[in-house]
Length: 632
Ligand SMILES: Cc1cc2nc3c(=O)[nH]c(=O)nc-3n(C[C@H](O)[C@H](O)[C@H](O)COP(=O)(O)OP(=O)(O)OC[C@H]3O[C@@H](n4cnc5c(N)ncnc54)[C@H](O)[C@@H]3O)c2cc1C
Ligand SMILES: *[C@@H]1O[C@H](CO)[C@@H](O)[C@H](O)[C@H]1NC(C)=O
Ligand SMILES: *[C@@H]1O[C@H](CO)[C@@H](O)[C@H](O)[C@H]1NC(C)=O
Ligand SMILES: *[C@@H]1O[C@H](CO)[C@@H](O)[C@H](O)[C@H]1NC(C)=O
Ligand SMILES: *[C@@H]1O[C@H](CO)[C@@H](O)[C@H](O)[C@H]1NC(C)=O
Ligand SMILES: *[C@@H]1O[C@H](CO)[C@@H](O)[C@H](O)[C@H]1NC(C)=O
Image (cartoon, rainbow, N blue to C red):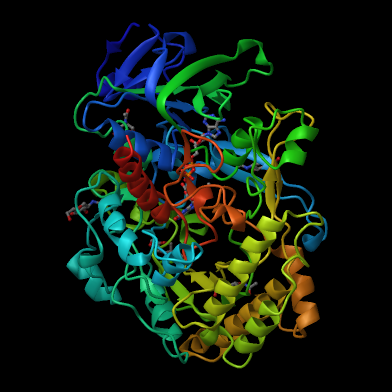
């Protein structure tokens, strides 16, 4: 095997290195291999997917210099401005080459609309294209997940908190900024050793202060001591940027090119797609089979062996596809696709969830006394030019802001004090099979029943946030996210072409009517916030749904028109739950019914946290690495 080392600077200049030079080289400090034929025949661990979780685990497993690890990633090394730029938060989305982009099944609950299903498809995965917001769930989320095992497991809040600290290097906001905006933070919830950075802009939009203080006028809204305290309320939170150069900090920079010394035992094959995990006759994983990205037939497939374990980290959309294509999944589906069944595991691909977006209401402040505001980026070229000049000269100013640093994460008792108990009661009384697809396996139904009990308790609790409003800092606001949707979808192989066709993604958005009950309250609450707090002095005018839409039926009809069932936070398709509850992996992340295969990405979350998903994904990957090391 030829391994040539070149400097970071040279690699930076070259950008994508696919077409250049010899077969393999080291970009500080994993060895990047570009052709399948140049791999070693065997590694201790083969990691499928070099994304957020995959690279975190790869870094930790190779740290001691002993384990040999191969990461296989369908995307490539990408370091252009679409990936690195912090300012405005969503630069990545402008470059379609950085994404998987599938079309969902038509959504009957959304008037038949299909949704663009996207996730990062580069080395670093979704952490390389995400919106930078860094928040973790509430304590109750982790305790709920642990409770599905019906006894004490090592995944409750107290157990995972050390991994949140390990996963992130927290940099406090400047004293001046914290004072100016009343930013509460407490670094006891954070660590300082990770190469993944959580930092702050140097400037914040002036209107945010009013958004944050006005929400506190609503009964029950609290301000927790830190975004990482595991409590709902209104809070400020950092974003995933390296504060020195003000560039995106993500799994690739932190756990791949950012590691301290070259590691001969850490290999990465980019530009190759894993088709399946291969098994021996006893159901023990042998390795993985892969093709160059873009290949459309099995003729170009090669295999690599894993001595200890195959670790699947392809993300919530592709992990179930790979497991199913390997013969691990619902028996009938696999047979329909002509795949030999290794284990009948009905939970693989079921229980799919994402955070619905564009729910609630949008308001426009028509008496808006603040300058500048976030819209000036798009509407005031003088402002934008000044912000660019400041950023280039000093790495400060408005272009150090990504997609947002504050918002409200509120429990149902605050959103709907008069109705939340009824909503919980009606939801809890449902027949668990009633809103799942016909023919759903009984273990999956049992899992849904367990979630229903736990989520009904969450609706009643002061400790679990359902409503999220992230404040942008402009004259129009309404970025509202539904944190615990109750409908469940699926992600499955296309039985006509299980290996090369994209997965079939069905959100089954609003299939559970209790979601409608909750979203009606989101609209009502949002109106209360704009019209009955100090915000009213800015003359808020309702843009959507529109003041004339008041009855629950009309509100739901409007939501069906505009809701997007994804904020790009898919989870749940390889849930860490008991097998009798439709689970796919156990508490040690091992896939049920086979040997030597684990899953470590966001797909293991049994349901959604009351927060976006990157922080939890990194923390769980850190914990996964310890678990995997401890069994070797
Ligand atoms: C546009 C966008 C905005 C977001 N904004 C935020 C935010 O502001 N805050 C937040 O907390 N979260 C956000 N998220 C969510 C967060 O980034 C994800 O939850 C998290 O990164 C998921 O990590 P993962 O390891 O599960 O998957 P990923 O990081 O997606 O990794 C999966 C990897 O597997 C690779 N892969 C897939 N199939 C194969 C195959 N067959 N063979 C080889 N490799 C394969 C993929 O290319 C990818 O690199 C956002 C996500 C997106 C897409
Ligand atoms: C990625 O790009 C940034 C900004 O241009 C640069 O500072 C960094 O060195 C690059 N990283 C690599 C590994 O090339
Ligand atoms: C996904 O594809 C659709 C069209 O099919 C396009 O409109 C959209 O911009 C794409 N999204 C991304 C992130 O590339
Ligand atoms: C929204 O408010 C802005 C700023 O106050 C104003 O310029 C704009 O005309 C308003 N738009 C609508 C549709 O009300
Ligand atoms: C545009 O921004 C500049 C610089 O901040 C400011 O002086 C000017 O008043 C703004 N113009 C408008 C129309 O808001
Ligand atoms: C950069 O910072 C210096 C020192 O604070 C300041 O004098 C200068 O105006 C800034 N440059 C720009 C372009 O904002």
